[in-house]
Amino acid sequence: MARLDVVRRRVALSEDELETLRLLHNGEPTPEEARAALVQAGVVDEDGAVSPLVVDLVRTVTDPMIQASVETAGPQGPTLAVLAVREETVWYTDPWPQDDGTVYCQDELPQILWILARLAGLRRREVPKIATPFTVPLRAVDAVVQTMSLTDDTWEPARVVATAQLERFFGEVAEADRSMLLATLSFLESTARVSLVWGPDAATDARGLALWDCGPGGYWVREQPAEPLRPEDVTPDTLATFRPVSGGEVWQLLRDLLPSSADLRSVLARVGAS
Image (cartoon, rainbow, N blue to C red; front, side, top):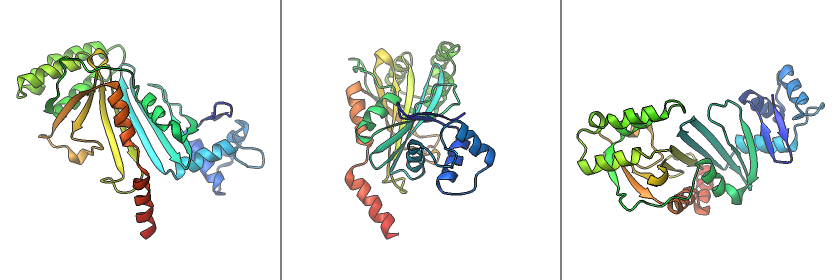
């Protein structure tokens, strides 16, 4: 059921409820049962007027200036958080693993970097002295990480199995790269993939970041192939290069994902000319 929290500027909605609110906001016909449920929840009044806070949410997610997604995976399972920016307003979700409910939280534009960092689980991390970049087949890395990204009960056994299968997955990889990968995987706590989009051209209007959090083993960013990565960009021969980075450098990498004023003006000029 929809819920409204004006004090903390948050709204709990299902996808169907959000669609109903979009129809109401646009003056389009809506199912009476769905409308009545929103009235009962206090999101819509008896005359059909939508709460101003919810109107702002609907406008932002319907026509965002910037969109972002933060995919994470860890011992409790995967999550997908989404973020939308319109003018000076930010709306984002902060999901729990294995929880289907969606809560939208409102914040202000200057907070966007802090929001992305928290959704990605950013912590202070230093680069271990022995850490060096390594290169391995991307498909093999994905297979290992997917095996590890299970539930709390099977995370440790899956990690043991995954690292025990290094010969199978990485038999042709140079020994130095294999050793560094094994050391990295032995500390892997979570993975994160952050993507930002602000226009229609995937080549110029989007940026992304793929990250491993290895706890005492530091952070590792996948430099090649660079994000955003599409399925068609990956072949059986695609190699992945991971580089160790500190928590401070991850903060800088997240900041570099944000579009500049020039980026946004370029989109507006292209859209206006089309």
